[in-house]
View 1 (cartoon, rainbow, N blue to C red):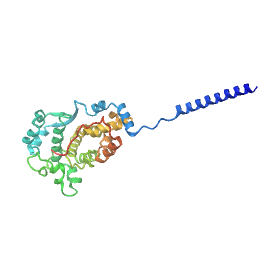
View 2: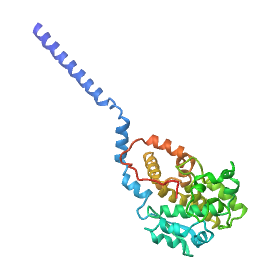
View 3: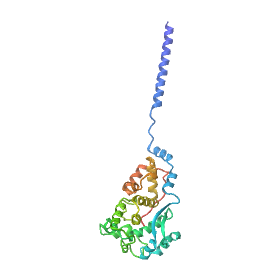
Length: 299
């Protein structure tokens, strides 16, 4: 009898041990894994996002063809002296094919890419500087009475005379009062990451160039959506790193680059210096987003 009780006790003990073992095993199977570190999470996200494919979408090697009624504007800018042709010839001596835009009279479409980005920021800068504009005459550029001290004016060294000789002096793009108002409204929504100002305060070359694009397109009766889309294409090649980073940010949050509203991308929250800095801080250090360069605010 005693022997049978000992055997029964042993069986019960073994059963309890197995039950405990099963319970412990189940607990360990269901236990949450330790949270990934910030760096591990970034590396995992970068692996999921094809950065090279993203880069090609934002900055296609062939660039973008944009409908811009440039026509004979290059000739006119040279004629009034805001562009000194000899200085442009030296500046773009290795890209003589681009100088055709200072001679042709029939240009309705241009290509913006990594090779043409500097030429177009300079040519459009000249136009934005010289064209008669309420943005220049009545906007923040004139608030302090020192319009000649900004990068977009004092930094213009490739004209025949100082920048203020041409500042808002020539009706190169005829605009009605209503069109001038619309230019101001659209430009006020367009920022660039070199500063915290919109194109309605074009205190640098990129701001002045963006203003010129807006004026040309408003003058042609183009819609707001088309204007924002066009300016974004220019900005993308003027500030390449910024827009690669923004594309990565939106992709990380589940939105493809092509689905993001250009007006939103150009807004203060994303394209101003402050807005972009916040986005960059959230992205953190992602090796795949290696530096691809960007524009400076000088000629």
